[in-house]
Length: 97
Image 1 (cartoon, rainbow, N blue to C red):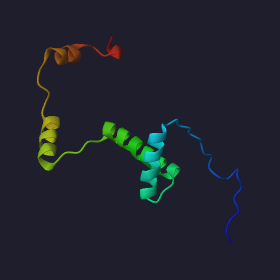
Image 2 (image 1 turned 90 degrees about the vertical axis):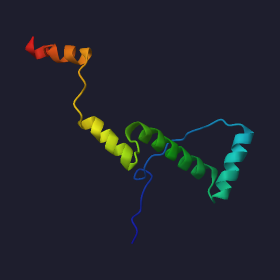
Image 3 (image 1 turned 135 degrees about the vertical axis):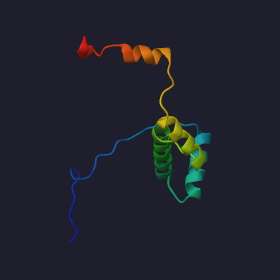
């Protein structure tokens, strides 16, 4: 027997309103129809994918094997001496003052 769910049990949904030109709306509708989706499904899927891509672009990057080896070599190499690094390392920590 299936459980009966009430409106209180269902996840809440938010409404997003967009103003688009008729030309853009028609383009979206044609693309949605080509994929067998309605406008909302198409726009939600496209928006979700764009959001994920935007966030992944900031947290992950892809390298081929050669690039990965070069990247790891840079991470494993000691830092090159420089004036700013020397000054930072010579500065006492706040709790040492």
